[in-house]
Length: 440
Image (cartoon, rainbow, N blue to C red; front, top):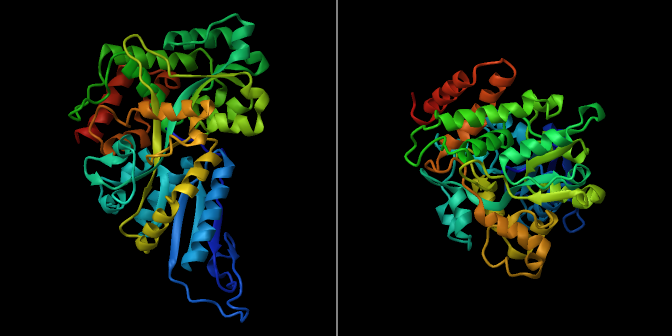
């Protein structure tokens, strides 16, 4: 939810100018200027400030292109310079931390919820309850945007996660689609073929929402909540130990490619689309990429729910949000753009650019012709079952911090790479979670 992006840096900085073209100044090396004449005289209009907008780059390139067009329209209509920067989520945290520490954060950020929530607890964000009242948001949308500290996030779209399985590989081995974690591993063992550069699983351990989300799901489906509803760390149980050993076995048995140990959130997208693996967990970005560029791979693909564990089963996913930093220079322009963004006609078309695979956060869109199509309705329905980050713990920044620090992924890495005793690795995971949740 854990949303996916290009594996290489996509940093597009556009400075939109509605008056005469400027000389470029300090931004000449990384921005392009667009503009025109004022009544044919060539005199530049006086700008009403500048908006710096950081967005995450989606794996579906059409989204960022469409967003850039909207930004250009906003710049022209409101006579405001806009610097639009699209950044892969894997790079976003580092850039944001540097910008915040330097006292120069963007005016507006669109990012995954778990990234944004990191800044709630340290009084970095603008309170947005007044903006939320201006739009008819779905209740489940507001649920994932809520934090115990208050309202600091504005939901943008839902991103359900699913399990992708190579149907053709199942047929070759006369296998049934996996419905449990045990079946996932058994299928992976059966279709694993490293000599021909094909692996059963496209899992990774390099940190980020995907790897920590997978491990968290395993632990919960084995019967343990990492943190309880009161914020008490409850991870150190025999069930959690078995779940850690189970996840480590994927890598110890060489069911994943060699780069999996350090793979980031773009890793599973890339190796799936390269046709190198048989099972991955991912958002709709993979489906959209196949639908557009690899229809032959899509024809070989099954889309399934996340598997059940020995005791429970949970869905997975997340959402994206707008946030504004209270030390930014132009939050008023950011608020103007948010209102401009949620024009229902534009917003509906923007989601269509994501091939209907990112669900709307506004009420009323589910009954449109687009969302009633069977291939889109199933994705819309999947957005209704997303478990909030950190569930069942209180909705605050601590869950985001735990994911950002890759506590679970690092624990499994220690078992796989450093040959650490699994119980010791679990003890260290418990210690790290207590540091985050209980300040111990």
